[in-house]
Length: 285
Length: 242
Image (cartoon, rainbow over all chains, first blue to last red; front, side, top):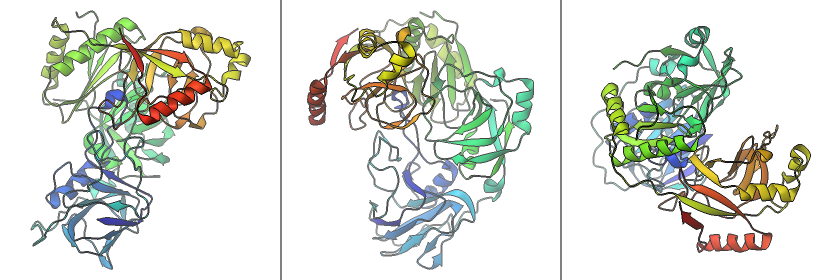
């Protein structure tokens, strides 16, 4: 078991997401930055779909009530076990009564905590990912108990630690492909989409990121149609919304770009005030 | 029967968007549903979701599509394939709604803006038969077609931060039911005591694209009776086969 001493700003259980229910309005959800999440799972020998803790912007304190192996990946919130710093992207042994804390942000927005075997919270519609109305919990709360598996740990996995390129967190470049309504844009709008360095507004969360800058826009709304995580929408007022993992399944704004999977992951590590630039490439097979 | 000229678009590396003419039309919906059912029945490798709207299907794959051109060709030939299959089974659902002023907190606005009194709003809203075009926005939220023109009303300029579960509402030329508590800018005219989405059920949402909805007015006493039956899990929703 793991006891939550302090839940932090926005801490949730996530896995690879919920599929097969989009046509009854259920979002796919799941790990925002799949690259970092999968890395954490791989380093301790978990399955790809084992659930982990997504810790947004730190301030989370957990007490382990049994021994296990963990790995922290993604954002660096200066994690510590008791008083010792924890190296990221490395398998770490945690003993009974150890306290793992996430504090000051060094870089990134979302840290991932994988525990051996994954968190054993309930599976709803094929996934453990928290979502309002689907799972009984939406956010971790103080004193929550998170069930984990018991293992007899003889030795840690040998692969010591993995070095992640810092550029992954720093680069403002987001690879995107033309979306279904890209061709409705004017020449000028297409050029602006490429050229403008956009700023992430304070309105950014698991559902989507709104950007500060305006594009001149005369495109009307479209007949409501499907949207996906990574869909870049252009609102009638000229504001841009990038949809993320918890987005609704349908929307009525023109879908001008579709982020690549790697760009969704990178964007998930950005927050208010960070800048981004779209690198638009034609889909080429 | 391939009756429409379809457009196939790549939608990122792991999805394909198929579009019909941009209209809200029952014939288009029927064709969309038929193609969706063909795709689901053909168990194409890697497909994790097939999502329909008024005039589109989005096919989501679990990984990047290997050869998009051959995938689209396969889908095109599947569309034109005239396989004799059972048509999709659809139902008309009878949804109890209490239009009492206790629930219908925006009914008075129809008096002011549409010059309709309370009884007229209820009579018109509950006499139409609505088509479920698709489900989106929230888990279990049905996009319904068929709202009488007399009930069209602009959305509220200030959305409510909290709309109760089961609220029956009108916004613009659409009507619908909020399956869960949410913020919302539609005018609330009543409330239904039934459950529109329950993730614990094998079928979390009873309705699907192509079904029909008929709202049945009930008074507060009947509402309370149905609500307690729903809570006990004994309420049986009335349906008839289309």
